[in-house]
Amino acid sequence: MLRRARKTVRRAARRTVGRNHRCLAAVLALTALAVTGCGGSAAQGADVTAKELRGGSLAEDFDLSGARFTVGSKEFTEQKILGSITQYALRAAGARTKDQTGLSGSTIVRGALEGREIDMYWEYSGTGWTQYLGHDRPVEGAREQFRRTATEDREKNGVVWLGPTRFGNQYAIARASDVTGDLADVDELSDLRRYGAAHPEEMTLCGAAEFLDRELRAIQKTYDVGFPAPQVYQNALALNYVNVAKGSPCTFAEVFTTDARIESLDLTVVKDDRYHFTTELAALTVREETLKKHPELEQLAQRLGEKLTEDTMIELNGMVDLEGRSPDEAALHFLRKHGFVGGR
Picture 1 (cartoon, rainbow, N blue to C red):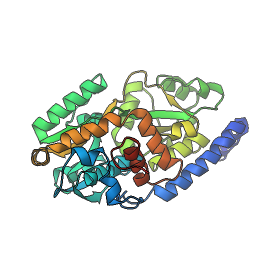
Picture 2: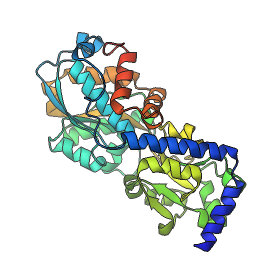
Picture 3: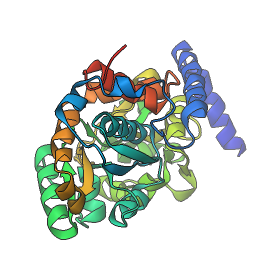
């Protein structure tokens, strides 16, 4: 413990004023987490009227009057925003919705879809390929990965992938940017082996439970590198960014590539030079029976997906994680900006 404390002090002594600025940003990020981190994004809390929802292009072009849908999502910010967008879009088209956003983990939310507890949620094509279809190796190319996932999942499981979006979220490994010494030379994941041999005590990693379960063993195999078990810290996704920004307790951390905190906390994404992580286009997944009953959902998802670019998703995530806005507010900002619902 004393040796570790001394190393922490030496690291702190090397940090610049820029690190102090980033620590303030970390506090702000934690504040945003406290505001938005609990519960689903019921698409009820933001200030919006039925008249406003019915005042845009979705109401003009789609009629889902009388339909009822239960909308789900996973628990992290991006998923809650996508869930809120979907609920508002469906309501704008005349449907009634029930909120089941914020479910914990891919397995839970996919099980809810297959078990008819929810009717739809946004999923990522790489996750579908490896987690639900059982493939070990990703498909090269984001569009081809999406096409093959969508085709096979529909044939085998009756799950239809609608969209997709124009952004490809994916896992990545990040470090702080304003570092010195050998760590500053870790630009590619292949560099981890050299760095770990020279600094084994610095091979510390923060990750959320799903990432550690799905990816840790595989990424270590791909890059022939080891993160010793006592030096792997499981925590909530939001804390990954804060912890790696201040260099404690981890030197490296799991991040999502569409997360605005990468820039705000001045993190460097370490290049995945062996293309281990899949580029995962998002799509609205529904059961085939649901689509047959409501074929309008296909075009509705395409309309939304065309506007959900990478820059847009980073902006929306930042509204929640950096500005302390709710997922509902971010969703309405998106829908109003593109004329999907009435604006103010």
